[in-house]
Image (cartoon, rainbow, N blue to C red; front, side, top):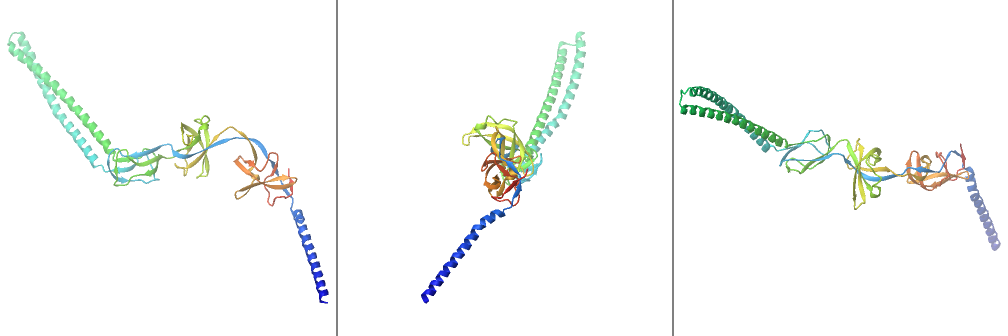
Length: 390
């Protein structure tokens, strides 16, 4: 009895297990078919993957520099009295930036002025001497004329006539000497004036001025420092005038030329500007195997020396596989497109190149002649049926 009951219960359990397994299997088997059947048909437009002639560019990286930069230094030795600017300050041409202790220079200027005053004071004395010499010359000439008449009449002796002649010659010599003295004093005055001008110029060296409108990019001096001739105190760059100094491979030396227009991208500012090659340094660096091309770029907000830039030089065109940029689906760093295959949208991972004028270069993942969905409609998934609209 017990054994028969156990056998019956065992048979019933196996039957229930079989029926359950069959139900689960039937449910699991129907689910994919129902899921496929439930995908809605997507109405979409497509565009072909094409082979086109793609303008090539060569990219060279470089650094933005000021076209005009000046390292300001003192021409005379002296202690720095005042520094009126800091790095980043904008300055105007002629603005005083640094002043030095000028007491020695001021004393030299006063000494030169005193020498000029002394030279000028001799003018009155020389003029008086000329007047006296002219008076003596007139008297000597008149006396000699009378003595000459009397000598002709034999009314005076030879001795008296000779004395009158000697006095005339002496008077003429004194007059010439007085005139020479006046010329000498005039020359001394000119020299004294030059000395005053030189002292004034030297005195001006106590003030270091901005040579042009610009921006202070570095400051290497503080009040109390001893400045030496030629030692840089400040660096100023001309505002609004910049260029990109790009390193170009030596193989491109023949293709880069002055006046060539290039596109320059400034990464930090997120914008692209038009540039022009103005100078080429043909010497090739032995380490990098590159030469420098200097490209003028327009100034603008936040354009400063030291920025990183990319110069794009036009090169010979090439054939490229392209698709509309709107066909690309981006999920983080992953890029994909939907390719229509046998009436269904199939997701393809793609590797992309340069984007230009609404098209993007496909390096891998799609082949010429295939059709991609563009624009990508909402709700489309891998395997969605696609009804292509004209």
